[in-house]
Amino acid sequence: MRYTRQIATLGISRQDFRILCELSELQQSKVLPFANRVGVTRTTLAFRLYKLAERNLVERVKIRGHFEWKLAHEGWKMLGEESGSAEFKIKYYHGTKEIRNIMDRILREGSSERIYFIEPYHQTKALFLTSPPKTLVYFARLFQEKRNISEGVSSDKNMELLPQYTKEVLQNMLGRMAIVYVVPDQYLRFENMLITQKNSTYIFNFAEGQAIEIQSKLFSKSIISLVLSLQSLGKKIDLNEYIRNILNR
Image 1 (spheres, rainbow, N blue to C red):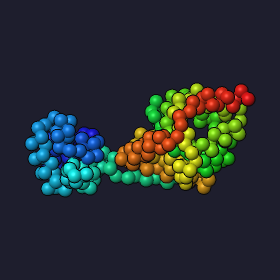
Image 2: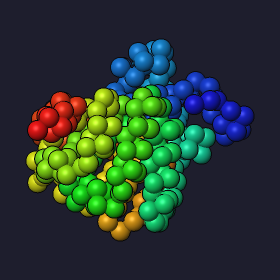
Image 3: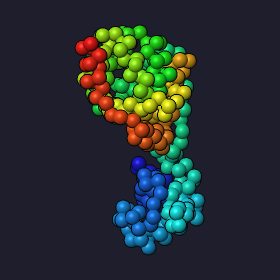
Image 4: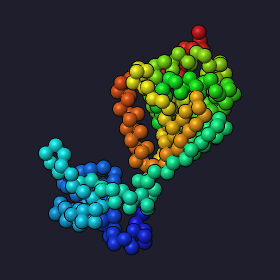
């Protein structure tokens, strides 16, 4: 995040701007570890934080008997106006064609990027039923071509869908760099499929032909944290080996 003339005109020094940016990454922190991270003395940081608090950019909150600092709403708003990370930008998509265009864009723009996902059974089945085999083959090939890495959680009931895919689809799914945790379906009763790539999160409802894109760094971080938390409820599988076993039957 750059220190710009626009920020300077708000009366924010470079040092204060760095404090706000670092605090946005930490979410919240005590003074001492925060001072070590910023590279200033504890006294200097405390003084600057109180000055920023006077402008309602940061706030001091009590957590389990001690105090920590975090960005206040005005702080998030100011950084959001500069970087777009704190403000939500929402786009709506309708119809099979628009949804397929989104999937294509995710895979092309996410070249060598990690893509996080949450795959509930209902929406995975809807995707299978609404997508011709040639479309699934196309996306499987594009995934490998762009060397994307996917990581996420999938309902255990989705494993029952894989044998229903055509041989060509399964063959093209082999070799994908995918980190998959299979989670009991009871923990993934989501109404929609979620995919997070970079600073955007996509919410898909394939059954109704609808999708929502939320452009927000903070929201994307929250979804990634949710994915990582759900992994603890499941079991990691070797998806490529699982597909090979299906093909060999």
